[in-house]
Length: 207
Image (cartoon, rainbow, N blue to C red):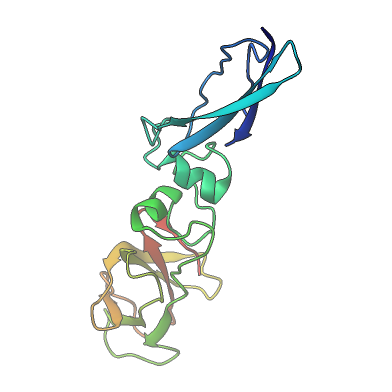
């Protein structure tokens, strides 16, 4: 005659077992972010002190890889952030690409992929004869998956507080440089100052 039943978990993330001293134990399958196997052992003891054991394994499958509906696979979020609290709009590594972009690009959201600060080619502290000069930069370094545009700004003061003109999304050139021709005539015998910022999607990176 059987005297006792004892269930114990032997594999997988810990789950609370119910009815562990009966012939049929139970547990509620937790939300999983990838196929997960749980193992359990049942040990029975008879009235003469004899015992035997058997094991069972149950595999729980993730039905929806993105339970929180933010566009990023939950497993990817847990692996990279340890939480599902991020909604995709943040930028964990501050490289100008949102977490969602990093997921779509297949890049590490915790390691900056650029863009770096671009270098000014011309004009650079020189006098020009054109009233609408062409501003040229060397493209920023960045991950090849990033679609980078550039924001050009022209100011009338060295502190760059008096904006003269600006363009927000100049497509990156394919020859290693990007240029923009100032869209408003500048005054003769006047000093101007300009700067440029790389932009990934709609997120800019100040340089």
